[in-house]
Amino acid sequence: MGSESYRLTCVRCGKVFEDLQDRFLLQCDEDHGPSLLRSEYDNKQLTIQREHPGIFRYNQWLPIRRVVDTPVKPAVFKSENLAQRIGLENLWIAFNGYWPERGAAMETCSFKELEALPVCARRPDGMEGILVVSSAGNTGRAFLQTCSRFGIPALIVVPEAALPAMWLTVPKHPNVKLAVLKGDRDYLDAIELADKIAALDGYFPEGGAKNVARRDGMGTVVLAAVEAIGRVPDHYFQAVGSGTGGIAAWEMSRRFRQDGRNGDHKMKLHLVQNVPFAIMSDAWRAGSRDLPLLDEHEAKGLIARLHSGVLSNRKPPYGITGGVYDALTDTDGQMYSVVSEEALLAGWLFESLEGCDLDPAAEVALAGLVRAARQGKVDKSDVVLLNLTGGGKNLLELEETPRPVRPDYVFSSKDYSLNQLEKQLLRSPTKISV
Image (cartoon, rainbow, N blue to C red; front, side, top):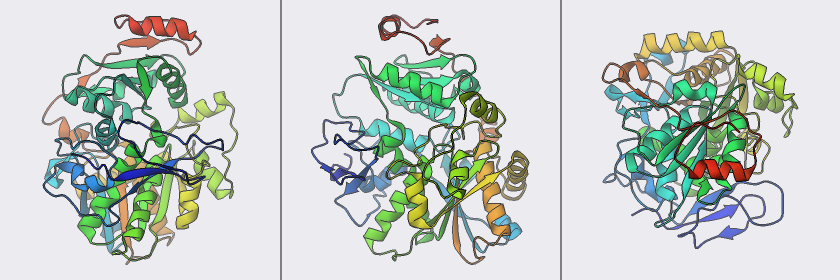
């Protein structure tokens, strides 16, 4: 059984939604500006259910309807070699990837498995329809893997540039489909196409940052850290493209403040973006709740030059009520913009000192931490949590060869009629041009 003792509250107007057993609620139904919903649990003090597998040991603070059999959870350990190199005494690493020696069992090598598992476990019993998920890469891979493993009908939509990141370590389930948007398309284009598909009969949207299961799943990084460290960290570092992981960490740290056993101090967020596309960092440094306006062509040109292509959302949940701006404001947080050379050096440093390869986004996060430590943004005795959101593919490939996923649908344009789209998707999968 999952956690049924929770409700959803609109961060903007405070409206409370209970009776959620047959609902997959993503947003408030009141007439006001954009706002996130937030899950509120009856259990104000978390009791870890160690008899449950993986992240479901934290099921009291997950908005789920069932516990899934999985070993997946963040691997948290205290760094020695890396910490000494950058001058920190209490550096803790949350590694989210594949690193058996450290107990990390995410076969997609990405922390997005922390999102996919609770989202699938939140789906109401008997709910029909196909879950539609958009992705810039690692989210798509995580949902392909999770939905295939548990036989959950899903359609994953990615831009063509993300196709090399679509691979599995399990057989692809026949009810799980991959749609690719060809050409000069990016994550936002995939989001827009997925939204149109999700509006058709027989489909429903996963919801992205609006889905509390996705955010609370990512928030288990903080739960695993508190379990390992014995207290809430002083600082939290992560690379962000949408910023949803930062919001999730903030929300989970708020629950610990309500818990009362971990003190009243706030965990300070340090969120890192990759130059040349760092719109949230630019807005934060300007003291603005509004993102800078970029021409679509200009934005895509900047995204194409990123070291980490997944850090590329052109419309992230930054200014929305309950979003990144509010999280940074509440925690007196900071944002950083690092260049690709810094990230590459950070990746080499981690592998040489700690012994595992990182994915590009994790390299960006570590580069931000290195800069913060050099600039004195954290005291050397502070408890610092570094969320490394992916890595270990080199280790995984020593054991097995990932299976590339071929697309079931290929779209050559976003300009189509809904009628045409519906007819094509109701047929057997085929390549289509609309």
